[in-house]
Image (tube, rainbow, N blue to C red; front, side, top):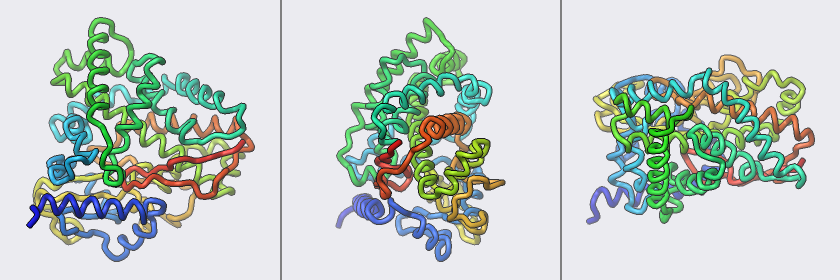
Length: 408
């Protein structure tokens, strides 16, 4: 008889591959079915699935639901990309609990404050213009490959204090390390090699930190080095892997927000025309893009004790899969949730999560999104969709397009 962990690994891989093939292009009918019939579903392997807005919000806000316990990865296949990242992820803020989470969040929030991020706007604008300049003469582009993928990487590289010459290396890292963050992508490409990329990232940020100890600047690594000197960062591994995860998280979410949002506009031409005629709607439009087709569809929590939720008891140690994308389409919370409404008010979506682990990079992501959409729509008035059915990545957690061919 195979062990329970072996059985779990097999079931997990089969289920992930099936999800990738059947639901990644359009998960919303599945979400509707689950919300209606099984809003809080316990699976046979100790994971609960939450799809209703009120349940999801309660899990995210309840401090008894801790960051996802990475020990659950013990049951994953040995060649799974996500499992290969375990050593690095255990230092990331999203997988930490108080008091470590409180300490790290206080440090990171200082840098990603509105005042600091607003000061980055000229550089962010320069990066968008540079990427569009490179494709302008062609009359066509793949929005993902040419803009949405490199744009947040280049922004974050500057935030970290990297030189322009290092940006291609950052892009190579994201091509490798962005894949295993999603369990479905990992399962569909189990041979993904991440250990070498992690080692390269670790070496790079260790060297950069050593330089900033001697020659501090006004960048995130310099702030981390100063925090290390005060004892707010306890080890160099914590510094290095906090930097790595900031790069990963900030890249995937912004890339997907731009691609998903642009496709939503093309599929809703009245909304596109309205945004072009009234650019002041950009702030509410960004929130609606995030709600309508969230860049991050799923997050995980682990119960620290027996917790009652919606009349059921989630045992201590069980894991809850919080389907943010399903909550964002809940008709009990949003009017006409399957309709794109770029002027929607009181749009309290969960795309940045909620509670103690609400996304620290929210301010930066929205500034990047605003500048990207404003600049693309202004510079390319004849922008059009070249392929009405672009392909989605086979993913569950990180929802994004493989490509989005456009003409202008």
